[in-house]
Length: 372
Image (tube, rainbow, N blue to C red):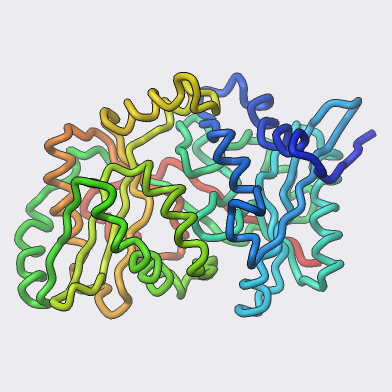
């Protein structure tokens, strides 16, 4: 018999966060989260998303043993401002037992109906900066810090419970040796002169901070047309700055500004922390922090996390300026592989950006939907 219990204590929340460590303990490809950071994500006193969203967390038990988990999420900005009557769910993990996944999804669906929502979609997080999608291809590929990994049986559970594919995301990579500067070196200089633009390079994290809020504003503008978009609010900016910027080498953050010093494009690249996180096993202390610090300095793989261009500057070659800056930094550091995080399959504009680098799709994932 399957029992589903809503979390009501800090100890249960810790069990919720640590459950995947059990079902992926033998996986060479799963990358564990930092337990402390994951707990903060779910802490209403820490994560400002809870001013505009709510979440309830559930654990499934079988024979008094935890066998599954799910977070049921309502983002009220999405529901009220965008009129998207969506019941979100994420952090959805379970053993290969259809009764377990069914019981958890029924809890999500029940909450959706109670709130007069029209459909469920998942796995997704609270916003666009959270992880997204169930993996359907690429199970033999190392995951990243900012994606979910799952067993191959997951997708069959969704479909068995009446869920259908809603949004497709693809992930790509390319060796740095594929990057040929002749595709952007001369063009970027022409673009700078034509539109009176200049690039900004940083050596210290504190140099980035004065531009960080503008970066999130630009993010909102450049991604607003996407089907998955939910606005990053002012109160969330400080939280995301603290959560992400400290993990990024300042030289991996590139901004482009116009003649008035207004930000018109940005890109954030992160060192790959995947192996370091596997070694840290979810803990920063006593040695996890040192492993992450070493990866930050020495990783030869990088992850393209975000790239955004103001709509009025899109299709004008502005990304050539960004790539020229990265080429110089990556060449100096001996970078070997460039990894891209999940991108909507129907986002043709973003795919065009990478066409000269001969990228290879190595992972595919979907969100799934069920009408209520």
